[in-house]
Amino acid sequence: MKLLVTGGAGFIGSAVVRRAVAAGHAVVNLDALTYAACLDNVAEVAESPRYAFEHADIRDRAALDRIFAAHRPDAVMHLAAESHVDRSIDGPGTFVETNVTGTYTLLEAARAHWTREGRPEGFRFHHVSTDEVYGSLPPDPSVKFTEATAYDPRSPYSASKAASDHLVRAWHHTYGLPVVLTNCSNNYGPYHFPEKLIPVVILNALAGRAIPVYGQGENVRDWLYVEDHAEALLTVVAQGTPGRTYNIGGGNEARNIDLVRMICRLLDARRPAGALHERLIDFVADRPGHDLRYAIDATRITEELGWRPSVTLEEGLARTVDWYLANEDWWRELADREGVGRRLGAGA
Ligand SMILES: NC(=O)c1ccc[n+]([C@@H]2O[C@H](COP(=O)([O-])OP(=O)(O)OC[C@H]3O[C@@H](n4cnc5c(N)ncnc54)[C@H](O)[C@@H]3O)[C@@H](O)[C@H]2O)c1
Image 1 (cartoon, rainbow, N blue to C red):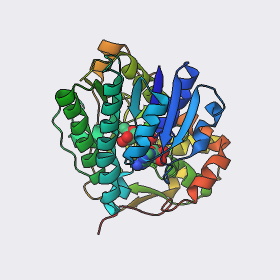
Image 2 (image 1 turned 90 degrees about the vertical axis):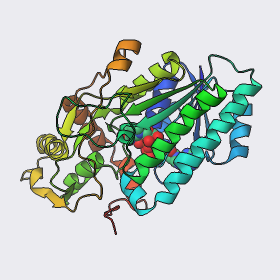
Image 3 (image 1 turned 60 degrees about the horizontal axis):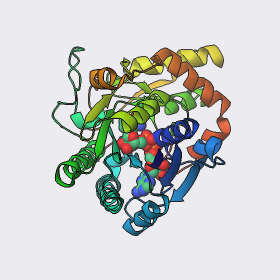
C-alpha cells in the first residue's frame, strides 16, 4: 500500500512510519514540523526508496492537493494534531485550527483525490483519535469505554478531537468516503516528547529535579506501548471495515502515582543516586478539569481483527527508561524547546 501519514514526525506517527516502511509499504510523511516534531524520529527509514517527506500544513488546501496529485496514496493515516492537554488549556485556538479545521481540510482534499481516482472501494481515510473524547470514568474497574460510549469531552484538546471524529463520520455517511476511526488510550515509549508525563518523570529524576505529580496522583490511565499502537493502526488501515470505529487499549491501568513510582524504581536499579528517586516526587496543583480515569474495552479490535497488545507495562517501561538513558542526544535538544519544562495549563 502507499500510505500518506500525517504527523509522521511526531511520537506515534513516527512509530507508524518506521513500522510501515519496515513492513514493505511506501510512505509519504506529511508534517508541518511544529514544536512537537523531530525528523530524527524517522532517521532509520529516511534513506529508504519507499519513504518520502512533505513539509506541509494540513490546513493548507493547495499544498494538500499538490501532495495527493503527486503521490496518489491508497490510504491516508491521519495523526497530525496538537496533542498536549496542558497546552490546550493555555491556548485552545491552535487546537481548534489544527485538529478541527485541519481535519476538515484534509477530508476535503482526500475526497477530491478519491473522486478523481474513480472512488476506489479500497481507499481508506484512517482517522487516529483518542479515548479522551469519551470523558471520564468512575473508579469501578468493570466500567470501560466501548465504541458505543457517548462522547463527553472535557478539555479543549479532547473537544477538538471529538469534533474531528464527528467530521470524519459525517464524510462517510454523507459522501461515502471509506473512513475508519480508532480511539486509543495513553501511549508511551521511545521518542515520546519530553513534555509528556513519562519522559518528564524520567528526565527530572535523572537530573535530580522535583518530579511534578498533579493532585494526589490518583488519576488512572490505560497505558499502551507505542509500537503496539502502531501495529494496531496498520492492522486497522488494512483490514478495518469502512465506517467502523475500533477502540485500542493496553489493558494496563495504573494510577499516575504508581506509574511514577515504577519509573523511580527502574532508575534506582539503573542509575543509583545514593537515595531513592521517589524522594523527588512533588505533588502540585491539579490540572483544571482533570479526568479521573480512562480505560478501554478493546474487545472489538481483538475479536474482529486479531490485534492484541504484546508488551506489558513493566516491560514497556523498562524498555522506555533504557531508551532514554541511551538517547540523551535526542532529548537534550528537544528539552530546550519553547514551553518544555515549564508548568503549563495550570489554569487562570
Ligand atoms: N499520545 C497519546 O497518548 C495519544 C493517544 C491516543 C491518540 N493520540 C492521537 O494520535 C495522534 C498523534 O499523537 P502524538 O502523541 O504522536 O502527537 P505529537 O504531538 O507527538 O505529534 C504530532 C505531529 O503532528 C504534526 N502537526 C501538528 N500540527 C500540524 C499541522 N497543522 N499540519 C501538519 N502537521 C502537524 C506535528 O509537527 C507533530 O509531528 C494525535 O492525533 C493524537 O490526538 C495520541
